[in-house]
Length: 443
Image (tube, rainbow, N blue to C red):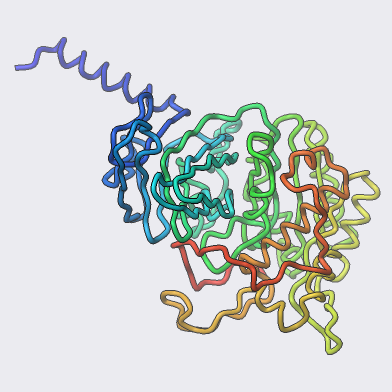
């Protein structure tokens, strides 16, 4: 029979292990069934995520291991699959640097990496026969708790299942031959964070085939320099974003030297309780946010909203956003705030595509293109991954043109010309396993 002392001792040990795990924010994982590298946690095909261990393959991932006999424990085995697979790690909110070792001692590899809700981190990493590559990126992890006030963000019901509001970091490995040898995760506490506030045209869209520029932009920055923290949500207005405590959540997370990118208009222009008039309440709200950001030594940046896909008979874009882009430009001038004129760049971009080619940049798919999709998808507001990526390039242009200090952390110094978009025929980003047929809120 167990003594009282023994019982207390076991409880103490269990509590200590639980506490130690809760404090762990750095991990080294060796993927594969071969001999693990010293100092690394071995991840085998049977390592399934559960909250107790705090790591493992997730969301029904089906993976296999390939091993070789050699003297390099990290490179002598890997995990792969012929379908997208997901690996999750329980982590407290914050910024993290991630290193992923990819390759095959006796073969080639092709890997795309996303994080959380389809946030693009590595577009396409290719290794030739017997070669390896280490891909690095920085990712922001968040939850809905506002710790500065013991409150919570008022999430919408559909957000309950979104990967970017849970208590873990989820990585998606995809493409024709993803071969993952190792993953390292370490906190990134001192780098600059760019917070995104916006609607469905900015948010990390959870399901294919929808996408937004906010989930593409992380791939354009150098690792370990900038973290993109996307707090946008579909259907949001300036007024609703603040009312749901999303802005308060940003203020609770942001520190001096960070940035706040603000893009709203599509929903603010609609009648109802969240409507704002362009040259009065809309401008006043923007100025209120600018003032609050500056009080905190955070740099505000205004982003005019992109056009909807609406062409006239001459093939020119119809301005359905009316006076809102001009109101934002005016606010930027009056407040001395940088303005990224995505509205102007999108007009050039869409007209370069024209009425026919532009369809590929938006969510237009015949019925039965995706599981459970019984009706045609015809959305002229929200983007395919191709369209979102091209708009992200426009944002990158705006960062450079505004001479924002974070421009030095961009991977590519070249200028994107919206009048000469990348050919859609060259676009090849593999789809995630998460799909849906429900159009995002907002229009």
